[in-house]
Length: 526
Image (cartoon, rainbow, N blue to C red):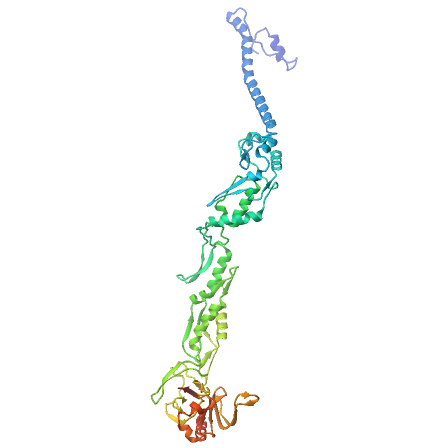
């Protein structure tokens, strides 16, 4: 301490400040010189200053405490107030029941609320009103109000007074769905008039690019009957005053362009059309028939799961058309006989043919296995058939039904045998069938029998030389029961002809037998 420290102490201050123990000296007192006028004034004013200071500090604390008490009282008052009445903005259907007790609200709504209740359905071109009576509604108002009051939280009133509180109930409302669903559906159908339907994404063949592509889905504006119906029924359950239909209630697409199922379908379909096949029947022609990707694409179909399949009917139609030019059996032939006569003939069993059923199976397998190159079709041809020829034979027997004369031409168009003939009886409709055939057999000493009538053959005829060409029932043979002169008259067959065969004299039959071979062509024409 300094040697100038005063000798006097303020006992009061000391007593207040000597809390540190009796062994600790008190802090030095304020020095007051009684002889100084200024100091005397200072000492005189000091207590007033302290009083004012303490008063100023106490005022804000008192204000805050007062405000807290007031707010608390208001809050608690609100809790009590809203324990028995509904919050502001509370409604039941179209009725405002704000600040009403359960009993008061029930009186306002009154019994038979279902009779006065109505639901306005609006939005997306929907505009109709459903009455409680139409819906066959039954509303337990008392139950709804009590449940709502019990569920109300008065402790949250400072927030809840600013919110909307439409009363809802799913257990205290009933209605006849069997009546409502058709009614709502009819309104939806009317609203959908002229609207665009939604279209799912799909896979289709693009003729420009020559491949299958995914076509994007198109969201339409048509409303979903199920969505709208369910929404309206939900509004009724909640006793809403209005039910707003939105774009969310439209029919939705169920398949989008990014679907793995569609992507897989596209890739699989494109793998099918990668097949490069050329149909060929080497025994019939050197020509070929190409099977291109666009044709295959026209056969591609997809099932419900977008798995690729082949339309069997379309494929069969195409294969049938493709092999038709190769079906040369019974084809139409036009030629000039060596003596200058023009002949047109069709029918018979001579020629070539493709097994259509086996061709269809081969093409189907080729496409499914994505084969490349030529596809040889199974075919069969008559002996002596000449492929790619306008007249596919050289050596042949010409049977002229009009002239009743037969000529056998060799490969150089020279006549090597000819004779007068008698063919099928025209009057009895046993005409000899026209067409191109080939000799099937050569048999000597054969008994020919007709069809069985009443247990007996229509006829029995022994012949020395039998050379069938139309199956095994019609052919060349000798007819010793005829007079020689009959073979030189071209009208005998009109009334006295054969049962269809070509009758010859014995000598003519033997001469033909000696030179004709199985497989030689026979052309029967008018």
